[in-house]
View 1 (tube, chains in turn green, blue, orange, red):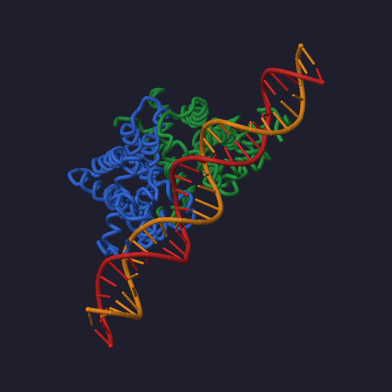
View 2: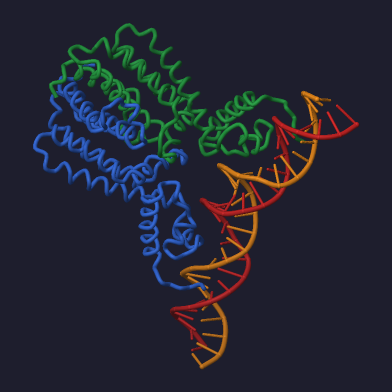
Length: 203
Length: 203
DNA sequence: AACAACAATTGAACAGCGTTTAGTTGCCTT
DNA sequence: AAGGCAACTAAACGCTGTTCAATTGTTGTT
């Protein structure tokens, strides 16, 4: 059989990405293979390579979806916060919660580029900037005497820190963190950093 | 040919770990394969599986060596610091420098457990605690009114943060961090966090 | 010295992987 | 009705981790 024309290329793409998300969620990053994915959408590997450049391309496109979902999730969880501190703590908690409930997907976001080595895809950067933007927006009211570029940097520093804590948790290395849980650690980071940040940067 | 008896099991183990480190350094994490490693030490795969449980076991043992080397490296780079602040900044810089000059090895340290999923090996934890201990030791003089357990937690929070920044750099995602370099970001994190930390934890 | 027992080592095999491509099939246009 | 073309498959290539029967060199015993 050939020339079935059941689905358009775009339909196949979307079906494949859906199936890929499911496989990753159920079996982890390593569980995703071209043959398994093709079987899941009732096609063969060849068709997959007609729609995607390679498996990395698929992973990358799933990751871009994840970044979008993450942005929406964070935004929704921070919108009710009254003070900027509240917003930042809510963002940190939401980030941890997202990583925890979708750990395989979240992990994939940070595993794949490691081998690729070179540049990240274009859309990637834009979407990640959007996520950073949420932190930046909450940090701006607390700027005090700090310049705009200092606020931008601070947002990235703070979020890299929250991310690091989140990694400890997701990669099952919380035993390295004593008895504390990730939320308490993030709390500590945000509060101390903010206190230091507001006190001015006389370095 | 069989029964060559050229090397003891321990010798083979050590040769294999040396060769594995070399391959990882030259070709990255993904470049390490059982056949390639066996060839590098002039044995076949079968022998490798006589000495190691599987490839994960090898990776894990290389990682333990890396943790030891990292500890020595950090210790050496912080020993001349006069003030605790100086020591913490030196540790952060040394951590980043280590990750940068041995990026493949450093990466492997944080990539492998992701799939494994379950518990980390026993030696792993002890060695990692030793690394944390360095940060803790430098942080203790700044404890002020904070309790010992708060200092311990702070050490882990701070280092998770430095680690997160380091990840941005090594995984070539510094473009996500604006124009700043990793050292400057780590600097900012350490200084603001310390300022906040000394001001007391009324949180 | 001959021989048996044993341990060390090999190499082939298995099932899976990513990726490419020749070949087949069915639809659309003329 | 015929031809052209796009969609799709199936098989192949060289790789992977892992296992294990078979072979070989060494050692201890007679």
